[in-house]
Length: 86
Image 1: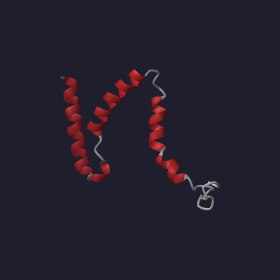
Image 2: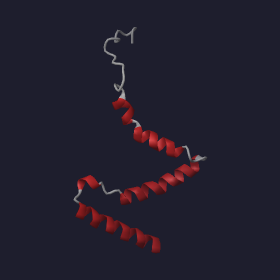
Image 3: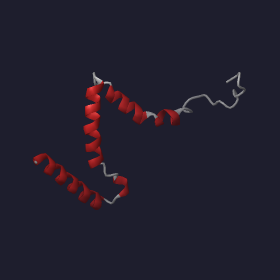
Image 4: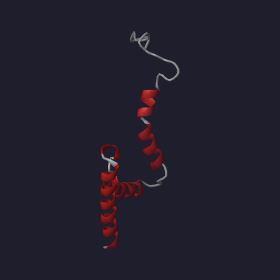
């Protein structure tokens, strides 16, 4: 920073880096989960199944009313149970 001439623009101190650090939290959570897998193949198989299930049940609750969310969730569970029974 001294060589570039930006030493006065750099803000250092307590809590000044929180926005950058907090933006990495979901990535770190995923990274921590990946450490449990010993082989990349196992991780890839899990990720393939998990993504399809997560996309099926992820309803983005904040966009819907509670009644509408419950109807969508019940429909997703019924479809999931139908797929499991077949």
